[in-house]
Image (cartoon, rainbow, N blue to C red; front, side, top):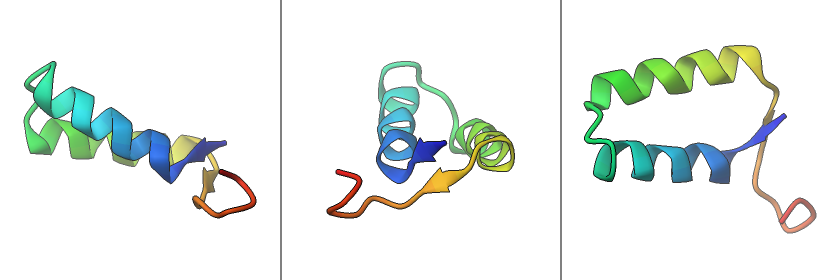
Length: 46
């Protein structure tokens, strides 16, 4: 299981710190979303 917040944080770090292209980030995110259950960020899960 992975939260939307974790995916957002990964995106920010990958783009800024690791200088990954938007296309590469999208590829990684797609793979994670296929592999793991996506948990929406709600008051109950936060």
